[in-house]
Length: 216
Length: 301
Image 1 (cartoon, rainbow over the protein chains, first blue to last red):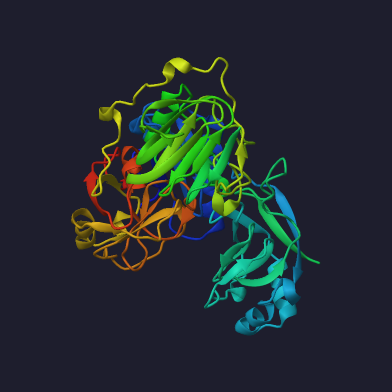
Image 2: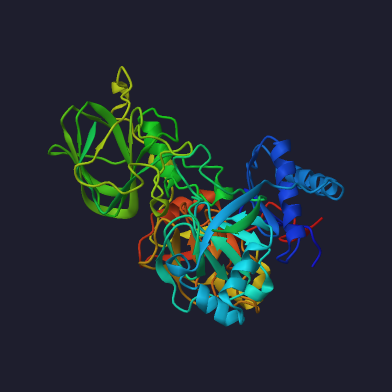
């Protein structure tokens, strides 16, 4: 497959795919393209949604004809080759690991063949990248999990997960923002509210931010 | 003040939707049938995105404590004001204290009530649209209950002259119990075999009872994937058609998850979303593939 490529999403959106991997450098390029288009703000560009390896672009074909959009994206992708990658804010998230806050810490440790303290050490070591938000308001998908901590989802999802729960699913780690059902292995919980409708900025994390977990 | 005497099955406050927040995991919400919603607002002299009610399957009973000009468009209900039968797709004058009752539903799934001036609830992220899974928008992020009171801004003077105006039948969407939805293939049509695409193009799919404002689940001949049945999660829009491993398509609606990990065979064009919104469990839905706006479905630069 040749990347980048532009794929149709109905008559008023496209997905710009930059690759087909979970990779921090590739994801950083998605955020660079997103930032570039947001700065450019051409008339008829309605919304962009950055994801792991692609950017969804919603546009109004009456104001921004598909050919003009393609030309604009081609030019943006050219500048991307040389532009420095944006470095997002660094957010620290305090986490209480284990006990009732992280009911699956022990089983994750057993699955990985590590003592629970080592799971905590390895989970707090990296600086993660917020690859994208999705699934539910404020839910952040992070890149950078130590592969040694990869653990399959629960066989039976929980019907309600308390907001702030920090989980692992396969090679991914993330923080639940709202009380939702879910099958991630819960290793801890943060008092940081990822989604707070009453706050000036309701979202603690933005796509492109960097995150460190700090054990409490 | 508008008082809810009976809430109906699922009545929510909606407006033009909460656009621009998908990057934070927030879907657009808003009316599932934007055409009927805009028609109702136009009949009462509102901008097309003014806040009104979305009414689902079983309608509410509402008392208007002030005189109002209202319109009900979309699904066809037997309406009465007091004891007087009144039509849908008309601007209606309601006197202070009168009760609007939604009776028998004759056709369609969702009706929209617009009121001159528009409902006036506190917006969240710029919109009054109710998003039930997130618990925000509308009235405390929930469906209406008996006893709720909704404020609106009655225009002064009331646009009495609008009463009696009709939305012409030829300008209503071509609702059908067996609609054909026009779709544009992509972004992951290459995840399906040619036979799978042919099944999708030619088969009839039945709307299932598990459909909601997040998505319409369909049942019919399974659409065959080539090999992989999941993708690296990417962006989803209202109208995206996901096909999970069981081959049964799901059309994403206004409260959709903003990202998804199932391949999306196609997306319904916006003009045909109202037809889907008015479909009922058991209705047979077909897809017609239209050429897309891009030269080819996968356009390498």
